[in-house]
Amino acid sequence: MAKATSVPWTREHFLIALNLYCKLPFGKLHKGNPLIKEVAEKMGRTPSSLSMKLCNFASLDPVLTARGIKGLKGATKQDRAMWTEFRGNVGTLAPESEELLHDLFTTDEAKEVDFLQRDRVRLEPSVRAIPTGPTEKLSTVKLRRGQQFFRQSVLNAYGVRCCITGISVPRLLIASHIRPWSDFPADRLNPSNGLCLSNLHDAAFDSGLITLDSDSRLVLSKRLKKHLPSPALEQNFVAYEGKPVRKPEQLSEPLPEFLEYHREKIFRD
Figure 1 (cartoon, helix red, strand yellow):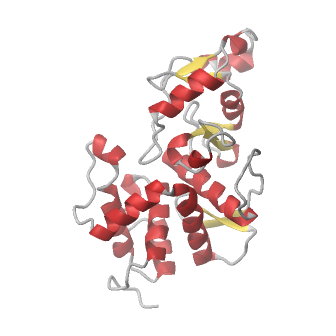
Figure 2 (cartoon, rainbow, N blue to C red; figure 1 turned 120 degrees about the vertical axis):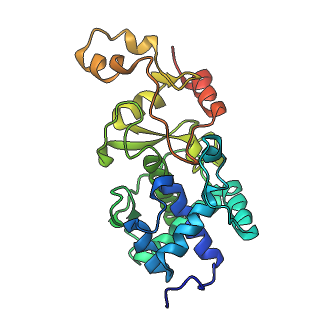
Figure 3 (tube, rainbow, N blue to C red; figure 1 turned 180 degrees about the vertical axis):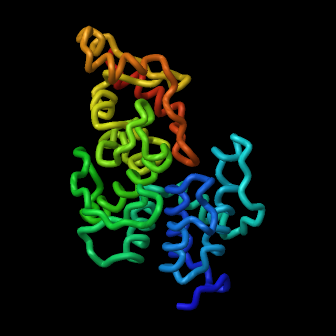
């Protein structure tokens, strides 16, 4: 397929671009980014064409707008319509977009498209574990694609670092749900319902031993503190108590009502 800006923007291309937008920080939306070059080539587009579309989406992002960051001013009516549809139907469209992105690079269903290294697209073995709880009657592949989208979006939004400790080893990081997977089906794949946490801090967050206050500062429960003094707890938890966690990039900023739910319903002081 010829690579040219005249290549039509199909619905499939829009969904791939929206998927990509959720995984790249604003500063990485330029045409020189190796990831954009690689995806654009697979789409049959120029890097400039894909980069411009991503920057159009940036102009529609309320999180960036609130921070005074502006994308391109050329967002079309179709850009706005697809942006609105994607944000309003992320539970359905995120797995679909992840499947489209996957199929650009491989037909191997045991592989997932990985963006965490940020220098090139990698293919990694599928993570087959799915959170327990009632789920829709969806295929295993669709569930994996949805989980892959959520994990990649959340981890990339936090710079592939635990938002509490700064740990930056991808295999030690979890895209942790703020409101539980089992209780909030509509928010399972919503990046704003996620935090990038280390395995240890994810376990503590899920069990209500830690939470975040209204200023996104780490709060430790009395149940956790009763195990003090402990060098391990002091190093991994006490050292960060009262400190604000790392802020995410676009679209993944936790909603205040999600964090409030965690404080009121899950935190066990």
